[in-house]
Length: 136
Image (tube, rainbow, N blue to C red):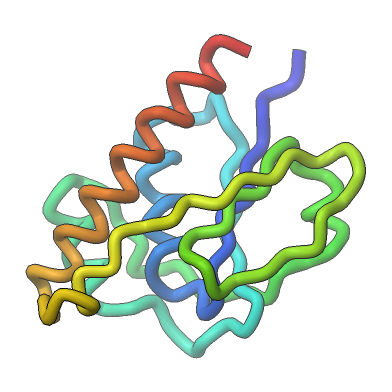
């Protein structure tokens, strides 16, 4: 049986999708093939996102924002969009889900405190998905 595969997508591929991918790699090791991409990728990984994950032993500092590849969307088992801005056209044979992630900036929380809350929220989604994938 082949390993399940997941593509995490956000708009810039510099924050949330990179965080989700890094946390999923930590949670599942080589048991799940993990990818991340953006619909309009930025130029670099968000420094606060990377700093937040380093505190839990996940290093995404060497990752580079990447444009979503339609072939990869067709090839993976699951595409997870993070937040409401990233849109990916449904593809037959690929499962899709959206994680409506916490956005503390809407409550006036910014900086590293915001990133810690975002990371915690994404981590809870990742843990639940990792558990689901382990039972496939």
